[in-house]
Image 1 (tube, rainbow, N blue to C red):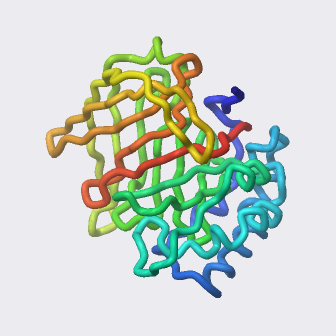
Image 2 (image 1 turned 180 degrees about the horizontal axis):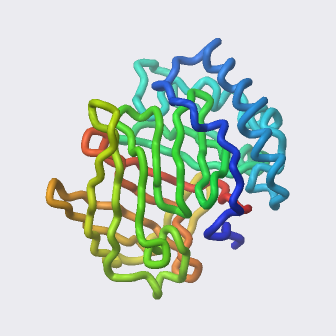
Image 3 (image 1 turned 30 degrees about the vertical axis):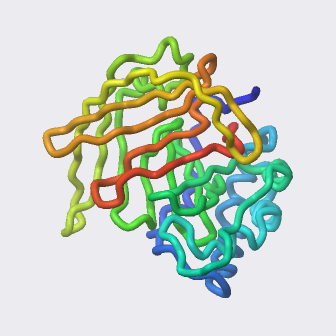
Length: 267
């Protein structure tokens, strides 16, 4: 199974740095945003990456056309919806036809929102929905969010010690890791919360991700700071250390986001 490299080339491509709005309703605004992303963000990423198909090899317009109204009409995303219609989704055949890296995000058991790889900045990759929510990853660690309410503004760890940032086989994962999360205060300033985290192996579990089943090791990470405790969870390929599914902390107010990798990013 081919999985992405831990690091990506140092490129500066940030169509994703504008402030993110809250989840938009379906219809006109959503389609306008989709067109803007197709013409700017994804096209830039595609132009910078040769890749094997998971790094944005198609033009942004082609990618979003492939995802189509399934993503553009996500009325629920990460915040739920009053609509009675079943939430939009993608089949594995549709996923395989999209030449771009894809992940899903869900909060509090909401329907999956689909995020497409949009931009890279050094080792970090930003994914975005047509409704301008975004997730930024440093390797496999959630490093920033936009549009989720109370967002994660930044993330830091010891790059060599953090197995989410510097990927390695599960047998080489450390027993403990320090994670530093950054947030904006009411005046726009930044403050940090440092968590000391202890990892423990729960066991091997079959995990289905959009019609594909993986045998993954469930790793529980118990984290504590002077202010609170929280738990991260990872479902990891034992040999490669790649995290196909995870639950990662965002903020006290927002809680955690459930993440699944549909198509891995490859530089």
